[in-house]
Length: 318
Image (tube, rainbow, N blue to C red):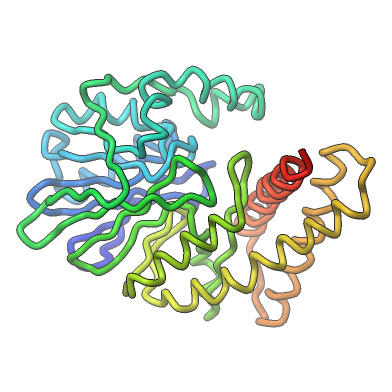
């Protein structure tokens, strides 16, 4: 089974981003209006379809497909999935709508970063017809069941086109990347690890903390992460964000101050090694042993995260 029952009629489908288990997932809310949150990239769509089949959900029953933001590991497959779900609408942040309708800039940007690997990682990225796109402003809601209302909250920090979705039935919130990444493989060894997601090019630490405080004020009981899975320990999430984000930023400031004339790439690499040392120290102190796949995932996250921090600091100088 590639699906996990999380209670409250919420199921998680492992979408195997980058071919790795528990990297990205799609959440299925089995209410009167079947609702799917996050699609991952197009190569993940076969896993979404298989998961829906395992859950006994017909593709014609899917009514809402929600993407927390338009980064390709969360929304790259939405156009392809929509082709299989004839009765579904796509709900997106107001700043993301035009990029789903015309993904040319998304494609151009991804090709510039990933080059020859683009097809393997993301192809195809299909446009979403305008008449199937719905935007939700901050505070707006949809009722998908008699006892289930979803409330959309503008939560920048990771990206300006990011909202989080509060679920009234579970008193949980789907946070995409706004308040970090969860590594359930570490929890398998008894320790929860949550790291900020500071990827370029709209990362802003102050906005991230503001969004976190707003989410914290809701007194939610569950947090559903884009990467990966659900925790019923929100206070630990907020505690670790308040711990790690200053560490990430202090490391960035140190690299920036000591490498003024260095290239972006050299600054990024220096920061990556500092962040990796900090995380490895935490893991060592907690006697956590990483398997190769998880080690690769954390290193990838820190590589991209260090890019976002250096990009933020560069923009601040202008």
